[in-house]
Amino acid sequence: MYDRLKEVVQRLPESPGVYRFYNDEDVLIYVGKAKSLKKRVSSYFNKAAGVNRKTLKLVSEIERIDFTVSNSEFDALLLENNFIKQNQPKYNILLKDDKTFPYLVILKERFPRIIYTRKYIPKQGEYFGPFSSVVAMKNVLELTLKLYSIRTCNLLLTEANIAQKKFKVCLEYHLGNCKGPCEAFQDEKSYLEEIDQARNILKGNLSIVYQNFTNNMKTAAANMEFERAHLYKEKLDTLERFQSKSLVVNRDLTDIDVCTITSTESYAYVNYLQITEGAIIFSKTIEVKKKLDEPDDEILSFSVFEFREQTHSKNKLILSNIAVTLLEDKVENVIPQIGDKRKLLALSIKNALELKKEREIFREGKKSKQKEVLMILQKDLHLQNLPLIIECFDNSNFQGTTPVASMVRFVDGKADKKGYRHFNIKTVEGPNDFASMKEIVGRRYKRILEEAGKLPSLIVVDGGKGQLSSAVEALQELNIYGQIPIIGIAKRLEEIYYPDDSLPLHISKKSPGLLLLQQIRDEAHRFAITFHRQKRSKGALKTEMEGLEGIGEKTAMTLLQHFKSVKKIKNASFEEIEKLVGKKKAEIILGIKEKEVN
Image 1 (cartoon, rainbow, N blue to C red):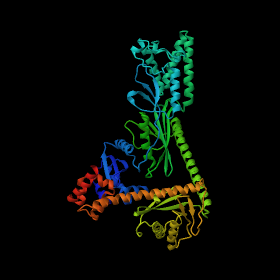
Image 2 (cartoon, one colour):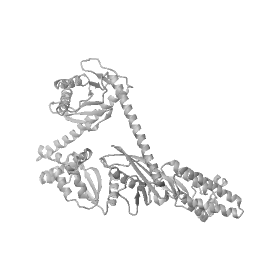
Image 3 (tube, rainbow, N blue to C red):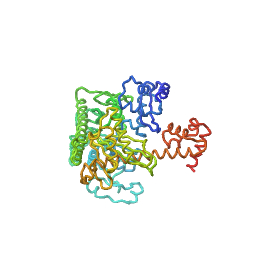
Image 4 (cartoon, rainbow, N blue to C red):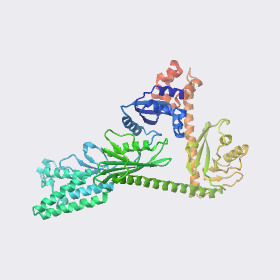
């Protein structure tokens, strides 16, 4: 396979672009960007490159490579981002957020209202935000409604409706919060002037609003309109109180994005701030799970792009603690060393470190809880040692056909899916659960002994005395019986059986230890059933094809080995099948597919 893929790689262009890796089910598993497609993709297949274990696992799953050429590396980033969002490949990092951000919007209507929403539909109006929280968004909206007379009703204020006097002013008018455009007490021109002023607050341009109120106050005072001057003074006080809560550095720092990263071996923590006139108008910190040991600069560049896209940022300056390698045209990246910009950077790093600390405490707490459950299980089962590694076996067959088995592995109380194993029953004919259990347990631990692997702390057999006795025989033949505790768990009454003990142990149904055992047993059963269904499906197609004149076992196996699944055979084109088995056999197989459709 590597030889075939290397031939594909040799034909790749030296241009920038996006490459895509697909597995044997033709599912997209990884998307990457590159300055040179040929050089970047070649590095995955260069054994001397010293690639990490996770990347080797990715490479082992690649069945097909596709690519798209772009004009620049930044354009490749745009393409990569789109492919990741549409397909969510399992080896790509994802900046997940299960909720949308709140926005404020000036609606496109006569006498426009200002409302908040989580849906971004530009044609409905002029959007401001997003805001990092509903509280922050409501604070801005409350400030706007305090400073300006913006209607909050949803009346349809057309010229005809107002002329026909369809509406009456409400309590908001009498409280002085609205000037009554519904009864033509305020004309559209003066209302839109207030909307224009409110727009500055929504944009975060508070200095313009501050200057405007100051000028109006001075003008009113000069004209001896002291009540009006006092009104503007109150508005200035409201604005200053709002600014005092949000001001972080001097007001000269405006239109800046700040993005910083700190990381561990498995996770990265990224904080993003948007600054306007020295105030933080947006803040978000996320945790990113590393998939292929991605370097910090790669994660940061991806995060900066994603955050700027989410917040619709057009800021031309990005502050960061490490270099952002991919930037839009005319956007500058600076790593400040002193001054107020450095203070902003320090604040961003502090936010990232806070999330890191919080998540590490959470994970440690989870580990402690899992350890506590294992200690309860140890006590329930009277074990000498903590059952840190538990392996559970289960058989599955359907009316005696296609017997298979499974083994699941739990480490520190959590599923270790890399340690799961499927077994085809090789030495047993017919539905014999006892003999099947002996075979798979023997095969499992014989291999571990041969490879000098690590034996589990506890073996669990799904079943009663019969299955347990069979598993014990397998351990005895390997001379390891007594080295590993082994139990059986019967489904009906959740009874625990020990070797050489005719009476079962009954653990409290509320015991966390029993709940963990049930979870492990149920997972082994699920894993076995899933494998059995796959085998039956493949066997059914093979039997169906072998029953046709001109189609034998060899042809059926050739198709299954090439396409890997029944679904892919059924979806394959006539040309693909013909290439493998010839035109005559392809026509016969095509007949099966047509019958299924009809």
